[in-house]
Length: 162
Image (cartoon, rainbow, N blue to C red; front, side, top):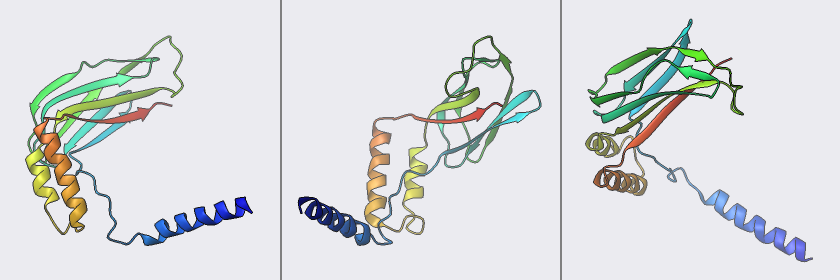
C-alpha cells in the first residue's frame, strides 16, 4: 500500500511538470560566436575558424592531441578578428611510441578568446529570434555579467583519427 501511494505521488509530480510546460517555455543560451571545423586533408589536418558574431579579440589558438600523437604546430595569438572573417590553419601530427589513451587517438583545436559582448547584446535584443521575454532578459543578464567580468570563452573541436 505504501509503495502504491509513493508511486501515485511520483506520477502526479511527473505529470504535473511534464504537461505544464508550454511552447513559451524556451531555454536560451548566449549566441554562438565562432564556428570551428577540423578535417583531414591527406597527410595534413586543416582547422577552420569562422566568426559568426561580432569581432572577438585576444584569441589564443592551441593545437593539441592525444598522448600517442605530437602536433607540429605551435599555438598562436591573434589580437582581433573582423566580423565574418574566416581563418584556416594547416598542420601535421606525428605518431609517437605511446599507446592511445582511453579516448583513442585525436587532435583538437582549442580557442580561448574574449567575445564581442556588444554584438551579443544586440543579437539577443532581437524579439523575433528570442521571443520569450523572460528568457531573453535572463540571457542578457548573463552576457552583461560576463562582459563586466571580462570573461573569456573557450571553444574547441576534436578530430578522432582512425
